[in-house]
Every structure is written in structure tokens, then in C-alpha cells.
Image 1 (cartoon, one colour):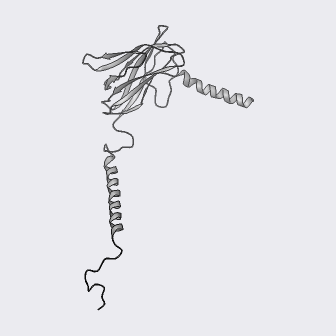
Image 2 (cartoon, helix red, strand yellow):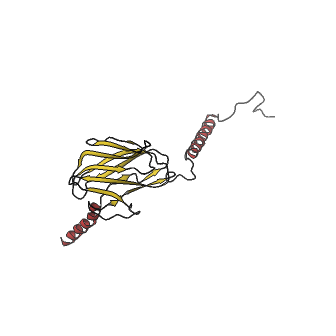
Image 3 (tube, helix red, strand yellow):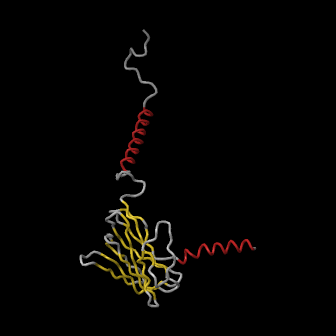
Length: 210
């Protein structure tokens, strides 16, 4: 019984830091330059308080060109003087403690590197949690900072091509080549299977002894 209690206590301690450090995130964490991508912004409740406003500042240049409407929320798109989408704000909804909400945008990254998404999370007690600090390092998790101290912004890596595709080329030529080879082998097999076991004689002399 004592061993079981020790295990439960250890698991509880292991889970608490992850829950405490929950913050706004953007997925996927990696996108391809020049490829249209749907980015999902996940906003969990902050510090046991209810969230009633979310504002996200898109990376510059981030290539975000469309914002999805979210049921239960009023969407306001923020634009730059040149008409570029620079952010979005969602109000009118509620994210209660132990709940989360998701918001979606479409974007086509235009540059390789790290795209930083900064955001603000308005709480019903009047506090605004800023997610504008340095992004978390790879494999690291920022500690909980509380509603009054800025937390880490979100970083999305923009790469030149999907993993596993090298040389900047496409995998289709290789696939097509393999398919043509298979078809050629099938064709040869059909030709040989249709040949007669023995050729018929060409004339009366064929097959006669001399």
C-alpha cells in the first residue's frame, strides 16, 4: 500500500509542472516556406481564471491572409496600413478554468527561419497576460510566470522543404520511374505467356528428315 502511494505521489509531482506551465501555443510547430498552412492557436485558461479576450500578433512577415470565425466569439481582424493582416482579436467568448479554446488562421510563410507569434490573453478580473517573452528553447519548458509577468511567445520554424525530401527536387520522378518499370515487366510477361509452346512449320519441308 505504501509503495502504491509513493508511485501516485511521484506521478502527481511529474504532472503538476506541465499543467502549471500551460500557455498559448501554435501548431504546427514547423511549416514549409511558400506552402499554404492552417495554423491552430490553442488558448488554455490561465492561472485558474476565466479568459474573455485573445489577441494574436502575426509574425512579420508571416503571410497570414485569412482568419477563421470561431463559434461563440466575435472576430476582429487587425490590418496594417498596406492592407496586410497583422493580427486578430477574439472577444465575447469565455474560456473557463480547466478549459481551452482554439482559433484558426491561414498563412503562407515567405521566409525561412523562426516566426514568432506574440499574443495577449485578457482575463475577467481585468488582468492581461502577455505572451511576448523570448520563445522557449528546443526541448525546454518555461516555468509558470503568473498572470502579471510576460510568458514566452510562440516560435514556429519555417523550413525550405518537407523533411525527407532532399536536393530541392520532387519525389515524383522516382515514383513515376518505378511505376513505368513495373508496367514494362508486366507487359513482357504478358507477351511471353501468349506465345505458343512450339512454332508451327512454315511449309511442307519443315520437320521432314533429309
